Length: 86
Image (cartoon, rainbow, N blue to C red; front, side, top):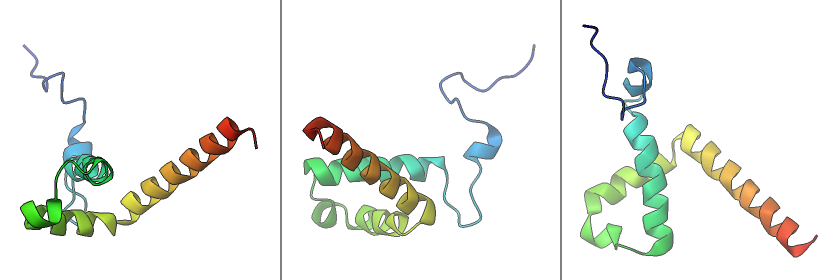
């Protein structure tokens, strides 16, 4: 019987492995969830979870996260222009 990773993981070993800087795919998801928490004001991360806030600030400086955020912002601006008919 061949051993397989649980189907819910959906990631290869190389995707789960840490990058040279130590970040993993979990950090990518955390960066996204952190933005939602910030936007929706679900938690006061700075006050309630200072270590998490520090980690989120470090993630925000990651070039891949910055690229993803800029891509998302550009898409949002494009959609707003289309909706406005401009």
